Length: 112
Image (cartoon, rainbow, N blue to C red; front, side):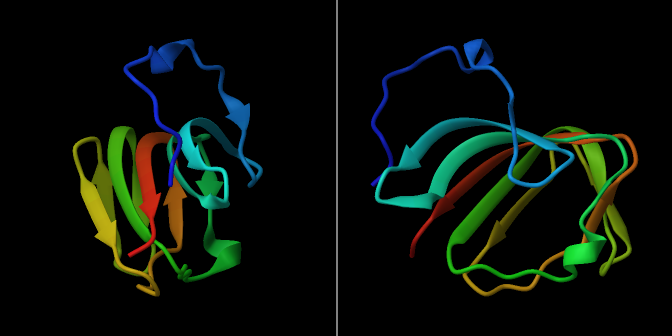
């Protein structure tokens, strides 16, 4: 299970480099036994492009809420901006994405 926390000021956390160049993250909570399971703020820099990775899937549920900026879903040919939400079941194909202006998202991952 994810770590347990009472309210804290997420804005006091420092942006850390993400696992992928062009991203930064603030991990708010993580499962110490399953590090892919987390809640985080993730920020894509302007020009970030996931096209080299192609369409992706993963084995966890992923919920994403765009807080600021925009991204283009290359497969769907649609742009999404602040206020848009996605919920993806395990193995649901999605992406690739590109963001000309950058974006900040809340991402929540868990196992079914």
